[in-house]
Length: 491
Ligand SMILES: *Cc1c(COP(=O)(O)O)cnc(C)c1O
Image (cartoon, rainbow, N blue to C red):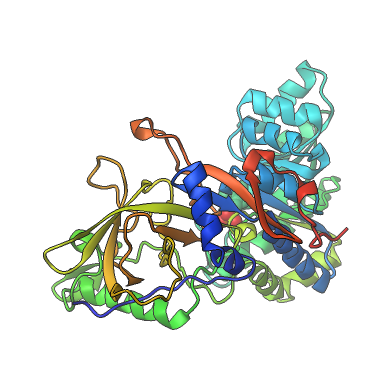
């Protein structure tokens, strides 16, 4: 058999305590069905506090906007409303949801492509609009005039920044206006100054590279200079999201796993994944080709720590730390973390339906969910699930001790419905009725991809919270912040 390769998930409180409550989790799935998503509002509020403490450390003003698109939960957005954070909405429906969850429009930013109805409601209520380009600016200005809406505060989203001496180019983005074309956009904003007020500029880069983000942030400072030279009074630089999550407990396991993937792609060891899938790597005459199409599941610096590191980076041209540049100009810093604010905020549970031994000694474990109910693979995140045995303590000896290499298959009549394409190693072989818990799925993996194929309902979601009697739960839409003790708040 293949030597076991583990990718143990990073587990922090209170998720550790929830996972230790196996009988509660079994009862929840018995009552509410498989799969089941659990969110932890208490930890969400704590993550806001972590970001706020980076602001304090650098003496910066500004606001943390949660990128709502990363999770549909009502419980989480309601809990967020009782923290100092704001929310970033990317659709008419998310805007309506944020308003209904208790956010006043001064704490709402609207991003993403926007249809007229979305623009109207944002402008009508007074949310800040993060404009994607010329057409949106024209559409918004026309709506404001035609419908007598209040003058709308806007940010101008930029992309395609280029560094000075060093040749660092930011990733091309489908969104925003290329930074070199800012002047023409400002011409238009000046023409529409009765309808819109430019309060600043923004970017969102889907990259892990600090260098690229430093170039973009400094580019925004230059863009603000240009606004000021025209007599505008901009005060906000919004640096988007992408602060990342560290999903794995051990960097060494990740290093080892990815080097074994490379060996497998070159045919120098047994395959690690279903039908020799190699996550983007291949071999050409014995040379490794391609790039690993995976999220860097182990990230030593992620979330609020990543923001801290970015703010300490020297500005590529001016040389002073980026935080200093912001302070000197008295600019507010806005951030829009999605994934990072949801770190350790939830898990996905699935019932084991069947375990089948394959001819090569591996096993197939069929789960009562499909690959889009827990889209770890889709998002390139590799981590091991936690086995929650039914009616048995985790360590009880009963002849099932492994380790066992298993493929996790979904419940759709579709060859490609694999929860994991890679061989996952479990300490024991699951039996029907056991649960597998996939930790840390709240960011994008829980409901972003969920659908109703085969007329299956999508997973229910519950909010878990603690009181003096231990863990309690409510259906996601029945939870309000009055139900947790909420000591993580800061005002
Ligand atoms: C998706 C998105 C975010 C959040 O990105 P994360 O990687 O989840 O932090 C922030 N801002 C914008 C404009 C986005 O599209």
